[in-house]
Length: 28
Image 1 (cartoon, one colour):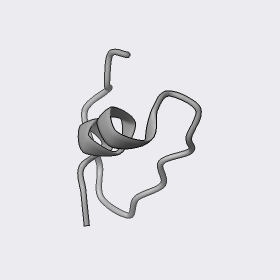
Image 2: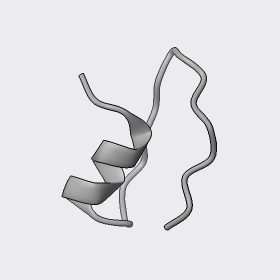
Image 3: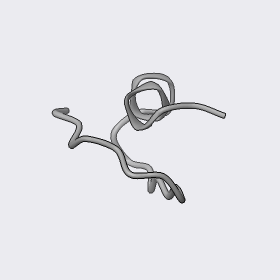
Image 4: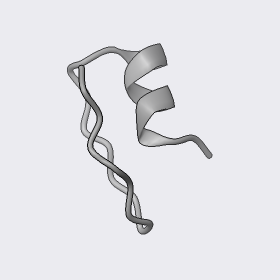
């Protein structure tokens, strides 16, 4: 598991992050 921020940090900006839990917005 990872957070939205971790997903964008390690996989880049061109991903779709889907989660069953709410997350704050991530600034890219």
